[in-house]
Length: 204
Image (cartoon, rainbow, N blue to C red; front, side):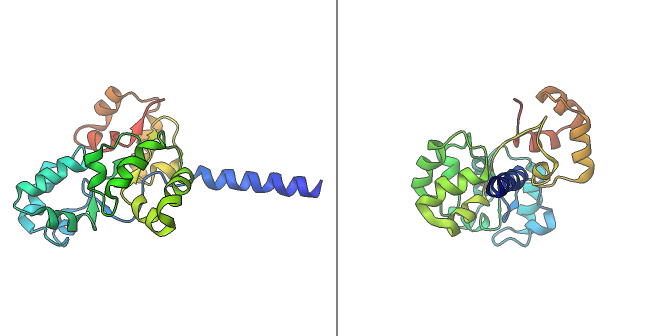
């Protein structure tokens, strides 16, 4: 009986831990929410580019942001250096080959591995499937650039708070407005913030 109780307790503890795992990777800043002042400190980003980038936001994808940065006169190598500091996180369940190739260190291998294991549901799944190819350190580095979409109507507070730029007041607004549709979210939250946030969500 003692052994059974210990196993059950361990299972409950694992469930509790897994239930609050972050759903948006942490490490690099979000290009859609980083401040203009912070942007101007990123290598290659001049104050003029930082101002123009903020005015252009939100970017629907990293490929859109990449095209914008190239239009500002930066080379692809300079833009790649920016991505060590700031990025537009990729949805693991929908990211295209072109988007994945912009993740520092992802390479062509991840253009196969990311789609192969869809749908992604937890970081534990990501750690297991990607880690067997590249190891823990590289897996943790890749995790900084991606997210697993959250159900806007059921996601836990801890998961919602991993979304870049999320505040306590915005969290309360999201919880109070449930159940959401895309249309109601856009109406209540307002553009462009609704566009920035909605990319992290699904409705199930």
